[in-house]
Length: 123
Length: 229
Image (cartoon, rainbow over all chains, first blue to last red; front, side, top):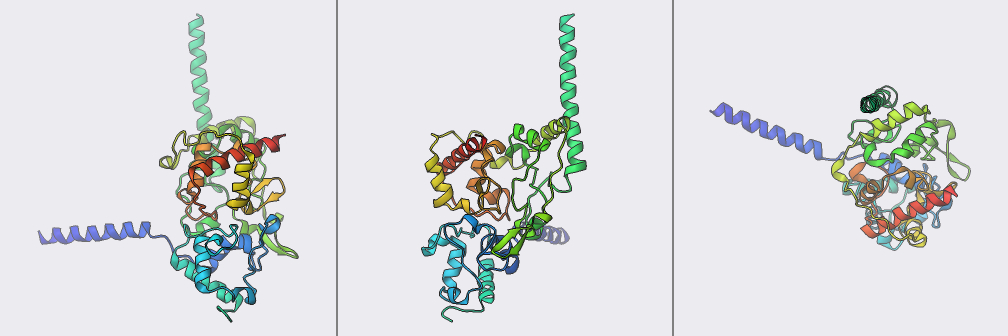
């Protein structure tokens, strides 16, 4: 009887682990997320000159510009990635990415942007 | 005698239709499955997204219009200016990133009988049926300015999609052929939540309400009519 209980318990745990592993979305590397979601507008080199800018009414931010990037706090950058430009009174052309990126991934992107500009808030 | 002839004709018609569908499945499996996902699921990681060479087709029967498919397969033209995943087909240029045309490959063309058979086979692929609500789209009053303002300005969709040849963004598919290409009920579902269909896709969820979705689909129809003129 004890053996059966152990087997049933192990099966339950294994099932839970399987369900968890199937549902948990992968946490992607910041550089990979940047390439996939950001470069279409901000450019392969992060200079604000992606392939979509030709007919844009507002040009995307140059992520390599330390002066521009240091004017934004990490909280603002997190918010604009998650909720879009409108959330910080900027352009609607910057869309919200909170439905495809987790908070952890967005924090990773904020750190990645700080590496790209070699800057921090106010510096 | 006439009844027997009719009966034989009906059997031949059914037979040829079944044979056509069977041929289409064979062609799909032999010639299309290297570049298109025919069974699902959609990419769940970025690596899977990047390696995708053509659109997922496991829900083709819920997505495409048969008449468009059959014609396009005989005369395929590029729908995504920068290919399936833009970053693989873009290079830095003097004035910013530009499409690297040398990296893009043309879609093979089919003869009419093959196209007919493949279209029938594709229309039988009905993945994600739970995401589709039949009759979700009802045609609204044609108001170019309403949908145009939403798509081009208020929602910023123009940033990634061309609304006429040579005008608009390049990373997403053109939308001036969307009305001919895509089923309206699928568009309703996809525009409401793109990631329900394609979890990693680089299209943001703009949280459109039902009225906005309808206006945008109406706008697509008007764009198609303008391009056709």
